[in-house]
Image (cartoon, rainbow, N blue to C red):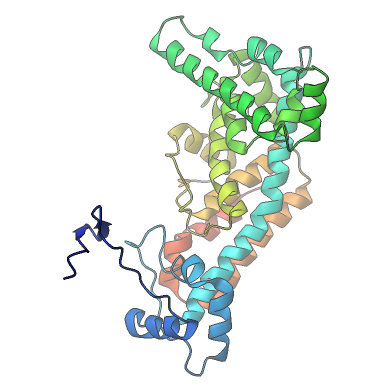
Length: 347
C-alpha cells in the first residue's frame, strides 16, 4: 500500500486520514454504465434495445435510474428485470408531478390570501402590528410555563425569519426596496410573495387562538371534534410543504420518500371522518391526493376542477398498472386499497 495513503473504512464510508492522497475514481461512459447495469444489477438494457441508451441519458443514471429501483429506501427494492420497468416508474413519477404542481400552487396561493385577509382585516398590515396583535399565541398560555417558553421561542424564531426574508430579498425585490427607501413598513402581502409554504405553516401556528379559529372557519376546515386548538391548518401545511418541495425540486414523489415528519392522529382521524375513507396514513401518494382534493373542496374550487384532479389520478394509476403488469410492484407503490380509497372520495 502506498505509504502516502491511509484509509479507514467505517460502515461502507471511506475516510481519508489527514495528509493522505484521495483515491479518485474514473467516470464511466454511458455504454459502460449500461454494461454495469446488465452485469451487476441483472437488468436487461441495451443490446438490441436502441431506445435504452437515449432514455437512460434523458433520465440520468444517478437522478432517475438509481432512485427508482426501490420504494422509500434501498431496504425495500422493487422487482425489476428490464430497464423498461424502471422507465415506467420514471414516467409514473413525472405524471404525478404534472398532476400535483399546478393544483398545489393554486391551493398554496389561496391559503396565503385567506391568511392575509384574516390577519389584516380591522388591523395593521405591517409586521410589527401583526406580531403584536395576531401572532401572539404565547399570550394564550400561562406566562412562565413550559408551554409559554416553547411558544415564545417559536415566536422569536418566526420574527427573525420574517426579518431575514426582507433582508435577503432587499436587493432582488423592487417592492421591498420601495417600502424601505420610503421609510415605510413592508406590508404582509409583500412578504408573503417571498416566503415558503413552511413559513406559512409556522406563521399560522403562531396566530393566537381567536385568529386561528377565524381562519379555520374562513377556509372551511374548522372542526372542534378533533382540533380543539385549531392547529389542523398548520399541520396540513407542513404535510403539503414536503410534497410541494419534492415536486418543485424534481425529486421522486411516487413513494412518499419526501415525508419529513410524523403525521399526527388528529390529522388522520379528522380526514378519515370528514372524507368517510379509512386507512389514511400518508404512506402512499394516494393519501396526499385525498388531502389536496379535500382542500380544493374546502376552498370552493369548482366541482369540475376537483373531479378532473381525481380522474387524472385514477388514470395515472390505471396506466401504470397496465404498462407494468407487475402486481407486486403496484402493491408496494399504491398499496392494495389505493384505487378503492380514491373511488370513495365524494366531491
